Length: 98
Image (cartoon, rainbow, N blue to C red; front, side, top):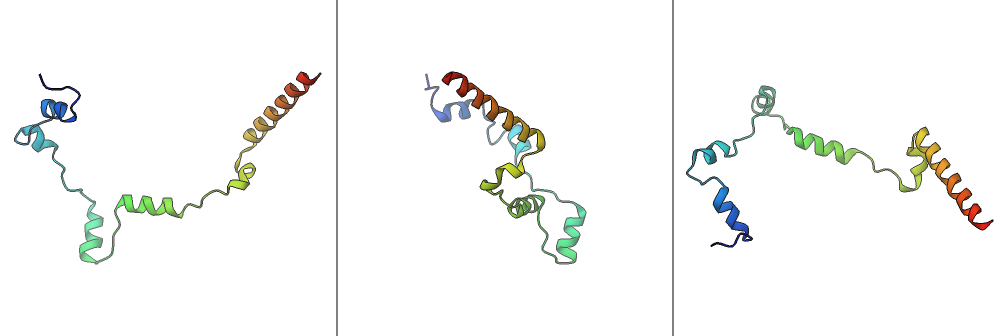
C-alpha cells in the first residue's frame, strides 16, 4: 500500500493525467484582451499595460499613512469609542485603589 502522506500520492491518484480530456480542457489558455487593447498595441504601437499592471501601479502610488498621525485618520465614532474606553479604564483603575 502506498504511503498516503506522500505529497505525490494524492496527485497521482486524483489529478487528471496529461493525456485525458479534462487535462486538455483545463490547460491554461492565453489571456484574452479587449479589442481596444490590441488596436492600441499593434496599430498605434502604444505601450499598453494589462489591468493587473495598472492595479499594481495604483497600489504603489497610494501613500502610506503616517504612524504618528493615527488619531486624525479615525472617524468621529472611532474617536468617541476610544475616549469612552479610556474613561472606563481610568474609572476601573480608580475603583481598585479605593
